[in-house]
Image (tube, one colour):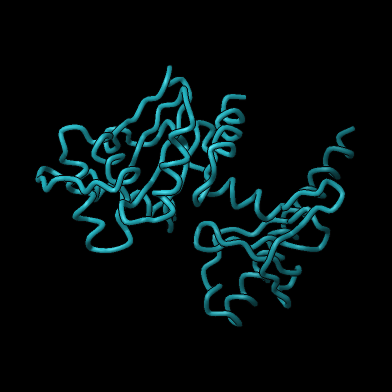
Length: 237
């Protein structure tokens, strides 16, 4: 029995050394050959035999062989289960814990009983955000936490300031986004908006609107009311 345990321990150590050696080889070869891959965050075996996942810059995914001689950029598809494994992996990496969101830096719009939760990062000069806001009016029983995220232009900052400093932030936002009524000029402490931009950079939010649901799932871009409903339902389950 002791001999079997010893053999098992030796085999485990050998396997660990082998994995470490493969990872070192991949890092060395890719780092020397491709300057953008000098710093690799993580190397793991992919579900496809012989293929390794390379993660860089937090959420960028590539694939390579055991020696780093070949590099693949694209989606890995599981044809049996009809799943986009790369997309699922990126979704997991970019998920944002809803409970960690600094809601004090957002304003809220409540519809119906407000039981369901949704966070939105939006720029007041974003045409897609305007379309999304008009569709979102069809969704009931939801609390929307709106994070002003002015990244499109200098004027985005000005409009965001006026909305944030308005007596009724939610009304000022909807008046502009849904009814094209410019917010009145206003001034106040806008440190929250600066923190939103900093947070968005941390989570690599590069476009608006970006939606975050209660389960941490994240959707980039404008989606219709029916899709919002699907995500709200999934987030509850």
